[in-house]
Length: 222
Image 1 (cartoon, rainbow, N blue to C red):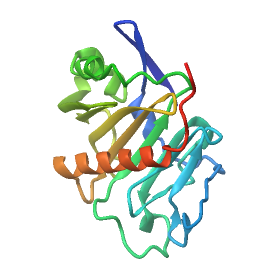
Image 2 (cartoon, rainbow, N blue to C red; image 1 turned 90 degrees about the vertical axis):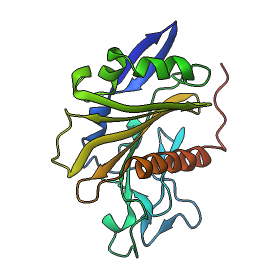
Image 3 (cartoon, rainbow, N blue to C red; image 1 turned 180 degrees about the vertical axis):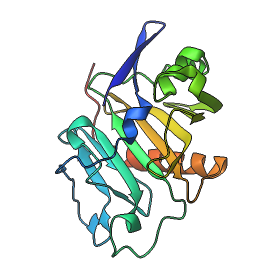
Image 4 (cartoon, one colour; image 1 turned 45 degrees about the vertical axis):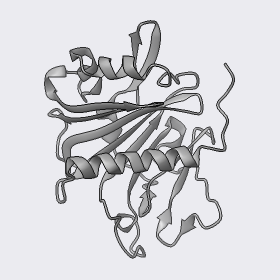
């Protein structure tokens, strides 16, 4: 799981290599955060990453895939709880495949540079960063947006295969999390493709949950 450093006007942004975020074979035991009412018969909703430096949590109906996540690398996979446990009563209203990648300490750089990052992602160099194999020609950018502390991109990546039953359309958000840059990615399953509005809503809902899960952790000074 690597990060691609990109220099933008003197600001170094550690952007996640998107394609690497979908290598979801088993990775062994996880370091789990289990709070009261969090570990249920339906699965575990919250995962501690990087020895508790950050936490992953999806929207209602989503659980952490412990076999596909790598807590020591700051990487988490979240899918509908019913896909992970036969005890789960139902799937989430919007069914997608979600990943979170949290970067190294000191990489936080989105807040205050939203416009710079938004403009960069619209260039060929930015598309190359978004693409799984680093080729701008594989990326069809549909939309780039920003709000304070967050830049989001909606795009297709022709380099991504369908071996996992996922579509090559992605919704991705870049934000700062506890002094680290984080990337949240949503993909839809080929069996039930997400429309543009649903994908955007799922990305935003996931980011809200992740921010809430990390609200009690203060970012390091400096």
